[in-house]
Length: 296
Image (tube, rainbow, N blue to C red):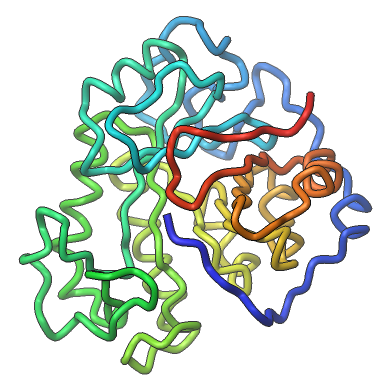
């Protein structure tokens, strides 16, 4: 839900670099999304209108190239979007909606903020005051969290992950896990952020959920082993998509969202990123049901 304005990153996008490294070959039906542990079948094996995914106690790891939809606002979720993966709000999405999408052969990701406090959430009062930091610029009612204090954040965040599991989601998209690179009001170091992000991934995996690395390009290479996929905002427009190449190299999906209000050349983004294996969509900033996809 949050578009990050990365004005100057250490890892600029080299357009030729994305194309120079070929995308991994699509896995065979027996290998799709495979890791060293047995996994549920990758959704690429399931027709968009097919039977529900097979039940599996193992977590789902999406392979590169899956189609996706991201909707975090609007009165109702549009269930008819032709996408293999849906990304929806944890609190606003009912178990019935998740089940309906599963019945159509979709995988479903729950969005939650792991690194910021939001005053409109039902569990806002459960956060200790001492972990709540400075206002999040541009987002009224939202403040940064002190991710160094994992023991104080753990009860609330684990409860959120459990709710994600209990509603039937397959995966979690944790937002705002790059506080070290923002004005949070706390002295959060890159190592503090790595420790928190790895802790979060461990908790998600313990509940059978896969987890995506949201933005945080400068730490992508260090976290690719712990995270199952990645999701970026504005990486083409801002020039850092190549930082996510380690995920593609590991056979893990990278879901890319570009926004209409940046004036991004979406046609050029598609021509550059789609052949390399990125899963690309164009969205409005409010993340309604509307989306544009790359040409076939």
